[in-house]
Image 1 (cartoon, rainbow, N blue to C red):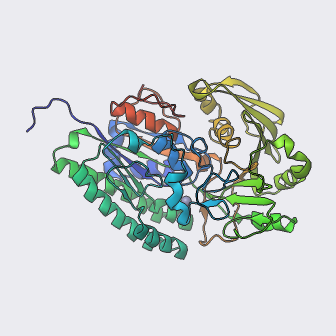
Image 2 (image 1 turned 120 degrees about the horizontal axis):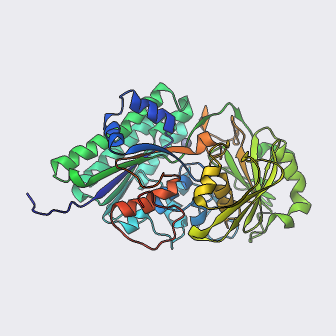
Image 3 (image 1 turned 180 degrees about the vertical axis):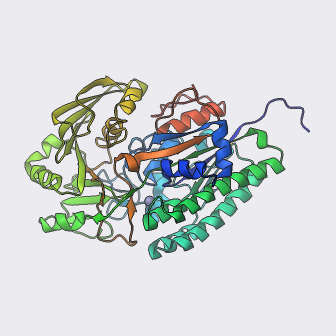
Length: 479
Ligand SMILES: [Zn+2]
């Protein structure tokens, strides 16, 4: 036995991909998740908001980098590289739901470190973002990708789950050997099954037990090797889920209006006047005049594109539609609820947001709101149908890699009827609360109420006693 009086803290962060906070709470209350129930007794289960777009890939940036995805160069699951900034891409288009998953780490801002960079030794298992992990990026090699990709394209969730179980096994082999100070493990079956069967279906509830099993396994390994005292375990979701019955063919609709549309998988379109990048599939970016290599603001585009915007807004599938008036101002439209500007002032932790309705109240925030800080901006949205809309839209829409028009689907809709390989009854990607809210299960008390997934990284550093001066978008809930 060691005579050390200090216990080294280690953190295992488990990502419960696509798990809804209400479903997780019900399963905990029913006694189906004993390992997580013990964590909840020591800490608590919180409901926090993801970053927009609420889709795997971009939505991992907050709890791996402490930044909103658009802040680190990942504006969507699919996006168009207007600036031609990527060293390699086909038709300047990215889709991380295909083989471009290999480019995720390289596409992110190299100046923004990951938690794996900051806390070593580190291990990543089935994580969409794994840059900097010193002891392996399990699930990211070519063999894993081919097996996972094959299961995905066949729409075979059971085959997917077998691949996942094999990857989890390999993750724990390395976890045992390396005793990483930081490890992150993604469990993706609940998301895959939610798309196929609904996010509160019995089969999804059963799959959530894989998260509990993984936690119990980590605790057994640490106990057997004598380091259980320092093992801290947190669980976070990346996005929510909501039932979808109607699938808009945005690609077909734009083509029927006479546009030449570049969109996955039709990337060979010559002379395209719109690059349409839908991902989630309940959100999309429209890049107008994609031959233009610099970003411009909406006022310069109205002559040619105002009628397209107005026609889009009339589609029942479109919930919110947003454009950037300038680098600090986003104009948001809703077909029935009106038009408003979101204005951001100052940078970093001094940032402030204002909401100025021009007509109606599109975000349903109850009227104009002046000069809110990050805390109050989040609180202002708690009664709205959208989560964290002020901060999310003002971060994404003017960002360098975003489209000129950003759409978030209406409730019950998604936007990619054509070319989606798997039939699905549930979706995500939009700014709607049910798609944005995620669980955060902590095994210890907090000092401040957790609000956003970006809060996880600065909090993890506090937990592990690591100081940094990195300008995260999130704020620690342990201070
Ligand atoms: Zn999904």
